[in-house]
Image (tube, rainbow, N blue to C red; front, side, top):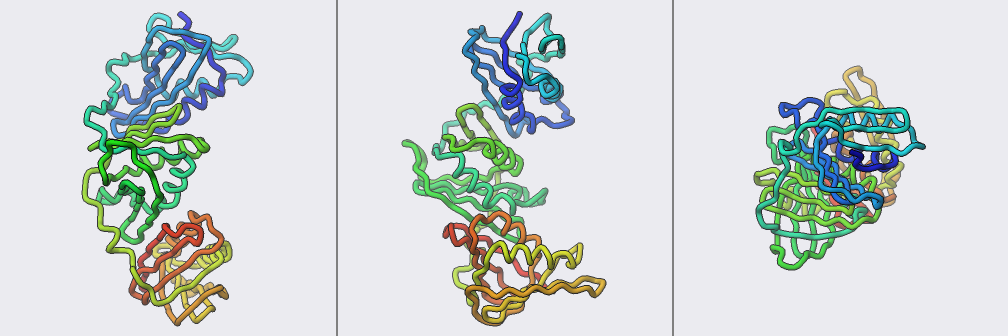
Length: 373
């Protein structure tokens, strides 16, 4: 029986977002598969790793189908679609428990597993909070802080992104214990939502959302927060992710309230010079010194071979005298994720954290601990 016909681009674009959740190996063979649901003029593709579930939908006005549900190998199905011609229509059908993909003279029969065994995440708890905004804004918020999440830290709650959602705004915070990134944006909650909710999105979920938002331009996005899950809904996609349990550190205690020294840089100029001095840093510690002297700033790096790199910058604003060390990688990553042309650095002393700010976004703050060199 023929199920439905699609163009190659349609199928590729629907399958690609869900494929990244599928592990190369899994103790549960069913999780190597994609759950395909055909219903009337719609087909949906769902993958899961138990922690994250992604669904992508496709519409086809030429078919009105009965409900058919099955699972097939996600990677094999995608590789087959990717290998087929751009010019011919692809036909999908079910024949004697085999899922058949056909195009012109090409035919592939894939083994199926029962859809009843696919572990779908079911949201049974009441929704605590719901809010919506455009995908471009969500993308900007996530991209501005995601880079400073911890990676496989034993403090599991640091391996994600902390969200504090209130009636007026959503605050996003990440930290790996050496640096902290803070940003916020205004929102409007739906009716019957709780006043304030906090949650921690896992690192993998954040990366998946970033990937999806990169292909979604100015699309409406709805967030629903539950006690243990978050649901993110777009017109053709839906992501459900388990939340990290635990108490996130009090980020407000980390952000310095006052600073003694302030410097303003041209971001492009500073980034180029940081990249150059980083060439001669120690491979292990990646430390550089920043020497302030009024409006003149010197960047200096050395290594165990007694090699040295020095760059000088005349800043637009600069006050005081200070000699302070930093991991240059932390500075470069921050600058790569700031879009404005001008950035500010604020220091208190050589032992206190520095604050990097974005001239075009007063809410953004990046706090980085100094190094002893």
